[in-house]
Image 1 (tube, rainbow, N blue to C red):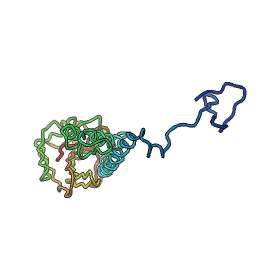
Image 2 (tube, one colour):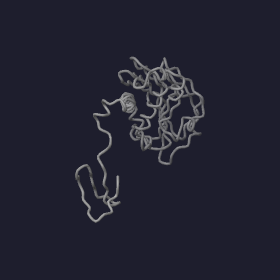
Image 3 (tube, rainbow, N blue to C red):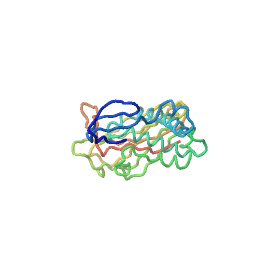
Length: 246
């Protein structure tokens, strides 16, 4: 690429040269860049093809996960939420050390210790975790779809000024990385107010049937209640976190 400083300037193509007018002046270049057919067939682009195949599979899984959790994710003010979900799936795929490049999968990556560690306690709100809202320990029995939070003290929760209620819900998600597909079941939504006293919380959800991994997620979202209906704020204090992987 070169800048034309001569008296004669042109735009368009002349022979093997191509010129265009830009804010930096008249720029002349020769044709270049990647050719789609070359990428598909030529040996130097084999790694590119392999990465593209893996990325495509991860994108399908990320899309399924994002769609299943859309109700919660839209209440988290994250400017690049889909990209964050895509990055999670892709990074876990990277822990698959048994498959050759081009065949590495999220499913095998999630079976590794590193993959499960990354998924377990993953917060979809990068600035807030479950511990920022709930100091109490909890008991999770994923096989029965049961979560118990003893002595939950809502007085310790910092409410946003515009929120009167805190909504709490357990979500169980069956993620089939091969299909890929997601099936989700949720517990009834529990609403607590600022004035509520210390109480035990019991959340029960049906366990989704089917193949694949079972994920448990806990949602804390601030909202207002109007005529018995909860209207959630899109607020940075809302949290959706993975609390179990089977």
